[in-house]
Length: 353
Image (tube, rainbow, N blue to C red; front, side, top):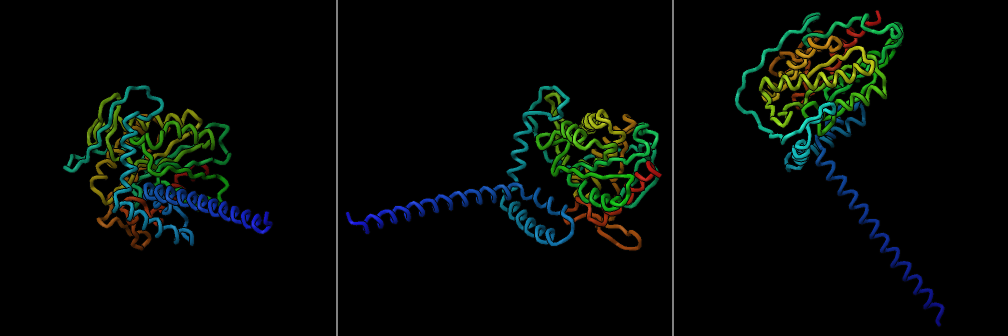
C-alpha cells in the first residue's frame, strides 16, 4: 500500500469531517440567531420599555434607538400582536388570583369605542393637598410601625409595572445617603391585576415579601389594566360598576398578602392621566377602585397620581416647562419621576423625623 495514498485518505477524511462539523455549527448558530430574533420581535414592546428604564448613559443611548426600531418593525408587521393573542388564549384558563378557587369561563376582549360615563372618583381621607404631578400623597403615621421597628432602618420596596421604574430609581438616588431608609426596586413589565396570565400578583407579593422583608411597599400598578375581567365564569366588562368592584377585590387580596407578611403600610398608586382617552376610562376606574379600597383597609394608603394636566401633558415646575409623559403618552418622563420621588421622600421623612 502506498503510504502517501493513506495519508491523503486520512487527510481527506479529516477535511470532510471538519466541513461537516462546520456546517452543523453554522446551522446551530443560525437557528439560535433566528429564534432570538423571533423572540425579540414578539417581545419588542417589553424590550423597548426595559430600555427606557436604563439610567441615562452610553448603554441607554445605544439600546433605546435599536429597541425602538425593532418595536416599530414588530408593530408594522403585526408580529407584536402575537403576544396579545397568546395572552388572550391563556387567559381563558383562569381568573389568576391565587387565593380564589373558582370555575373560570372564557374571557371576551371587547374594544370600547363609544363614550361611556366616567365613574365619579371618591376623595379618600387624609389628603395633604394638591401637587403638580401627584394630586395628593398619603399621610403615614409612625405609630403604625411595630415597637421593634422604631428607630431602625425602614426597608422600602418599590414595585409594580413599568410605571414604577423611573419613580423608584429617582427615589433610590434621593435616599442613597440617608441611613434611615433602604430602597429596593422590583418591577414586572406588562403585568396587572386584569392580566394574571402574565403575572399572579398575589403569589408575587408573597415572593417579594419573603425575599426582601420590606417594612413598607410602594406599589405603582395599573398601566396594563385596560381590558375586561372574568370572575366566577362571568364576564366583567370594563366601563361597568362591576369592574370597579372586582378590581377592588383583587387589590384587597394582594394588599392582604403584603400585610400578612409583616408589611406595615402599602402605598398604592394607579396609572396617571394619559393622552389616550380610551385608556383613561380604564385608568379612572383603576384609581376609583384604589380610592374605594383604601377606605376599607387602614394599612392601604392611596397615592393619587391621576392628575388633570395640560393637553400636551406638560407642566411648569420651578419655573421650567417640562414634559410629564414619554413619547408613548403613558410613561412618566425622568423629570416627572424626579418630582414624584421628591414627594415620596417627603412622605417617608415623616416616619423618621
